[in-house]
Length: 222
Ligand SMILES: C[S@@+](CC[C@H](N)C(=O)[O-])C[C@H]1O[C@@H](n2cnc3c(N)ncnc32)[C@H](O)[C@@H]1O
Image 1 (cartoon, rainbow, N blue to C red):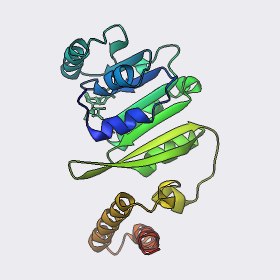
Image 2 (image 1 turned 90 degrees about the horizontal axis):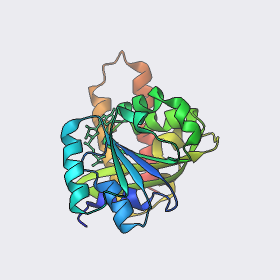
Image 3 (image 1 turned 90 degrees about the vertical axis):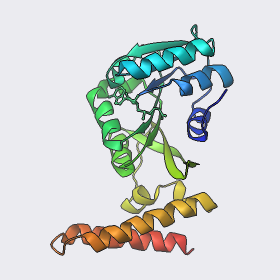
């Protein structure tokens, strides 16, 4: 089936024996990939808007996987059903992801794995999940149409992370491949631009940004 590299990579991180729920499914291609190509028995794909769900329905019909995917119109985690143990949320801002999680925190007791790919504010997402008793077991990058996306995999378990690890990514910072280097270089450029634009009165933010620039320069140059 036709699926972009980003969604494929997210799909490849979903545990094969899981019952996954994709929140903000849009076209439902991730859930279709899981049941059609990865052998996952059943999945839920949900969205809070009718337009995307119509598109999802057409794709599910096209790929003839109606018996394996349940489509649900719901706000965030309200689409949860008993047995769901894995949640995927991608292609949204990090603060929206945090809001979705915050609104139904109690349901997390049944969720072993969350695979989250925020478009921004990834540190805020990491902080939220760590506070809720998860730790990071995988961090992946994927480049699609010249944009580098982060994919974070969380599972239950408490762990302490220093700010440096939270910022660079505890797993990402151990990688030496070209895409990781490019990701850090882009981040360094953005942080340098930010530093230039900060008013002198923003002392705390200036200190933090300088620290982040140092972390990035060190990791790029080692
Ligand atoms: C940009 S699309 C991303 C689609 C897909 N997950 C991906 O990564 O390609 C975001 C989708 O999330 C849906 N969405 C945004 N906020 C939501 C929420 N609170 N609950 C459910 N769906 C939401 C939108 O309607 C939209 O279809």
